[in-house]
Length: 150
Image 1 (tube, rainbow, N blue to C red):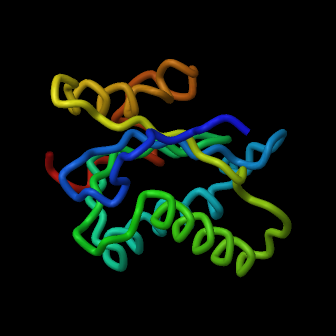
Image 2 (tube, rainbow, N blue to C red; image 1 turned 135 degrees about the vertical axis):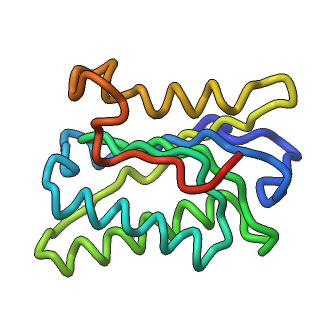
């Protein structure tokens, strides 16, 4: 399997922002169910409270989740944080009666470089439902937000 992460990079660095995409299990679009989508969005608050993560922007689409995040100073690596989120949301969704695998095993991350504009990435995330034709304006999409200021 090819290397998916940057060699010798500290994925627990609290001074780095990450653009993360987590996909639902292949062939599924589970987040069209409002109860399930609501549970995933509520779980982001759990992530903020229990893992010290700053969430600058998020958007839960029918089959994936986009996040613009910065880790807390807990020493947890990005993979551990995303693993916690996936595990917690899966368990919460099982409580709603859903069964099976919710998320793909892997996730995609992009480390923001100094010259990258985080606000442009946040806008890209928030405009995703508009580009996909789900809403006419990003403000109308129920499953997105900017919980923490940049």
